[in-house]
Amino acid sequence: MALLVIGAAQAQEQVRKMFIHMNDGQIVKIKAANIQEVTFEMDVDLPDVPTTIDEAKAMLVGYWSVLFPFDDDEIEGAYFIITEDLKVLECYKFNDSFPDEEYAGKYIASDIGEITFPNEEDPTTFYLGEEYEGTNLHLNSFYFDSYPCIRVEPFEYILLDFGLMKK
Image 1 (spheres, one colour):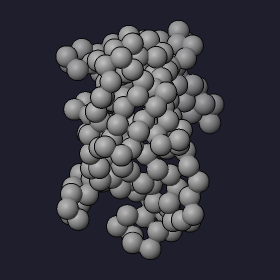
Image 2 (cartoon, helix red, strand yellow):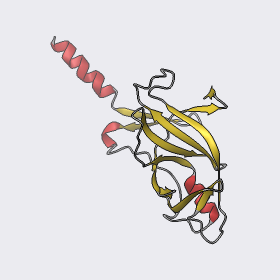
Image 3 (spheres, rainbow, N blue to C red):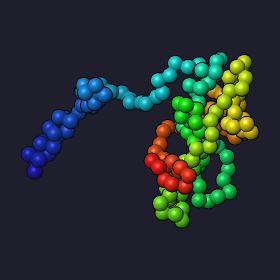
Image 4 (cartoon, one colour):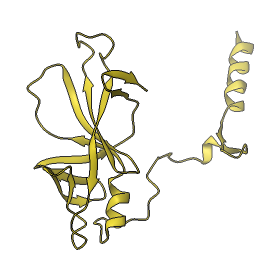
């Protein structure tokens, strides 16, 4: 029994390193005892508020939670996914109890248009189509037709394309 405890303790000592596998094939080894904290952050060099249209475009790319109340008990959340070419996907997270098992517990998205910036002098205001206005753009938030939107971590979703599922 004592040998098992000693063996387990030695095995634990042997796995006290973090291995980071880089895209170029290199493996970086770091002693776990030397790591205080691991965080993942966006690596952007942008101001908090855009001063140009290019900064505003770069800020908008990403995943956004739309904060508004739901009357539907089957939906957990609403999101916008804004691509690098400024296409907007409207996305809903369905509850696990959603009647259609194919969509239950999943994020379902559909393409709803593109972002445009009609006023070069105000990069904090943009439009989706001609009728929906985004305002007060900051690095991690904006308003969309008076609903606050905040940046969230990326997630997997199913993109609907003309009624067909597409991943």
